[in-house]
Each structure stands twice: as C-alpha cells, then as structure tokens.
Amino acid sequence: MKRLVALFVAVGLICGLALSTAPTAGAATVIKMAGMKPEGEPETIGMHLFGKYLKELSNGKYEVQVFPNSQLGKEDAYIAATRKGIIQMCATGTQTSALHPAMAMLETPMLFDNLDHARRAMEGKTFDLINEGFTEKSGLRTLNAFPLGFRHFYSKKPIKDVKDLEGMRMRVPNIPLYTNFAKECGISGQPMPFAEVPGALDQGVIDGGDSPLADIVSLKMYEITPEISLSGHILVIHSLYINDKFFKSLPEQDQKWIEEAAKRSADDVWAMVADGDEKAKATILANKGNIHEPSKELHEHLVNAGKRSWKLFYDTVPNAQAILDSADSYRESK
Image (tube, rainbow, N blue to C red; front, top):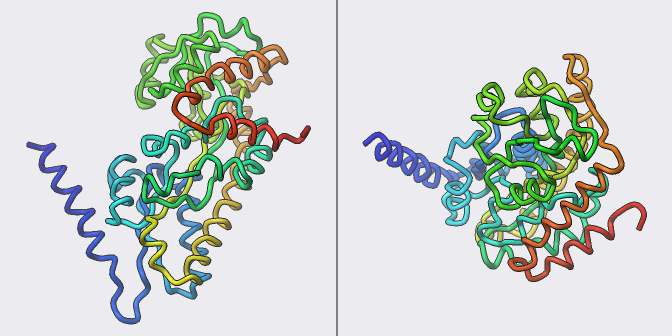
C-alpha cells in the first residue's frame, strides 16, 4: 500500500510539473531539469550553471528549475519523463545506453590518459560518433559532456603493483562493463550498492572499491580505506539532455542560447573537476591517507585488461571500432 501511495505521489508531482511549465503572459519560460546527484556534485553544479548562463543569454526569457538528488525519481524514471516531454531536460550518464548502446562507451575502461585527452575527444569527433543515431532512437538531444572524475582504487592495503591486486575483493557497480573489467584485472569483483560499502568493509566482505577522488573525500572513504591508488581506470562522464521536440519548437536564436549555455557550463565543470582532484589529494594526505602512483607494470596491466573488456562493445555497437580509433587519435603523442 505504501509503495502504491508513493507511486501516486511521484506521478502527481511529475504531472504537476508538466502543468506548471507553460508561462503566463510576461513570465519567463520555465525549463525543468532532473538529476541524480546531490548539491555540490559536479553534475548538479553543471545543471545550475546551465540555468545561470541560459538566463543571462536570453535576458531572463528562460528560467531553469533544477531538481537534483533524484527528487523526480531514479534515473530511468526521469529519463522517461524527459523523453515524453513531461519535463524538458535531465542530466545523467551511461543510463542512456539502454536506449542507445554506444552511450556506454562514454565510460570505456582505460580509454583516456587524462582529463585533457578526454576533453579533446568529447569536444571532437569521438563524442559525435558515440551519439550517432541517439536522438532518432531516444527523442533526446545530447547537449554536452562533462566529467565527474576518474575512478581510482581505495583499499585497506596499498595497490602499487600487479601482485597487489591478487586476491583483492573489490566492490564494483552492478554493471556488466565494470564487473567484466574487474575480472580481466584479476580482481574478485563484488557487485553491490554503494550504500552497502562501509558495512561490507567493516565486516571484511570486501577490501576496497573504486570511486572518483571527489567521492572518496566527500564520503571520507580514506578513514576506512586509507590507501588510494591513482589508477584512473574509468572516467565517469555525464551529459545534459533535452527533449528534442521541445528543442526544435524553439526559435533558432533560442536554440543557440541553449547550446551556448550547455557549452559554457561544461567548460566550467571540466576546469572545476581538474582543480577539485588536486584539492582532494591534499585533503586525503592531510587526513593521514596515502596516495600511490601505479607502477608501469600495473598501468600496462590495467590497459590490457581494459582492452580485453572492450569486446563487450563489438556485438552491441556497430561503430565501436571507429569510436575507439577516434579516441586514440586525440592522444598527445598522435
């Protein structure tokens, strides 16, 4: 009964949002945007920045209302609401791969050397190749791409060399790409919700896991697992999406404002994440955590494990090789 009531409340809220979108005479046009991350996270900051820039560019014609922290439901629910036009925009990551498998390649293991490499690819042809055909399938238009940070190992014992991975039981998200990569690394991957990680660490069920540095700091993981290895094996990338019919219904100048606001907000997040990583490292060290650079052998081991995990894409993404080749072409050595 409680679940039924909760469902009615959620549906009522979303429907209420749809009814309140139409502007009254002289009022700003309201754009509602949903996200999953709490306030202070790169995704949510990017959403707010988009709204700020769009308001400035349009001289107040548009007002963006941000609903972070899954206020409008989990990712699949608010993505569906955006596709239907109940709300106009959302922010999310590879959840959109359920609609277009190539979107999973935004988080391809060991695809990018660093943030600069990733940014060149995401602002270049690689991002276009990933999105090829996405709008036609989904009814959503991808406006930008921005990082939440590279995932790094956190553990009770240091991970510096390949041998340090042997026998390690590491929490992984319950996503085939992540579990397969862990297997290829020789790690005993333990799929579980992140909320269960502290208890699993206390009970010795797992030895560690992986997260962006910002998450490691915000959740104080260094207090339980003080050994941080800068493996950088997966870059978490999210995007802002807009209902394509809504976008096309707008005047050409307004479309340009939206695209410019999306670009500016992404630019800010790229810079913020790079700066935030350095601050996160300082915080970890100041709180008696330890930071390790993987050995050359460990890095090569992770690269090879990543490449073996790419096989998951070949059967589901027709242009997978073109995407991989494109990302490779943006390396500094090229």
